[in-house]
Image (cartoon, rainbow, N blue to C red; front, side, top):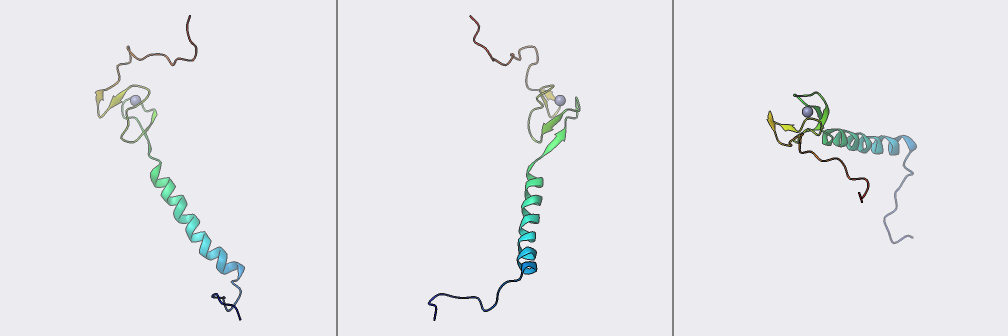
Length: 79
Ligand SMILES: [Zn+2]
């Protein structure tokens, strides 16, 4: 006799799949809720919700990042 809990019957494939399908669905909806990509009201570019627009540098209708001062990405060390 085993000293640990033993299931009385084998769990069928359909029961297992039904159980795990609900978990999968929940995870997918949670991920979909977390990714908040919206259109910028100023320029229409895709931006993260509650973040400054990377294209025009505006947030809530005001200029946050000065486009003239915006530096180029440093890819090389200039001699
Ligand atoms: Zn924008």
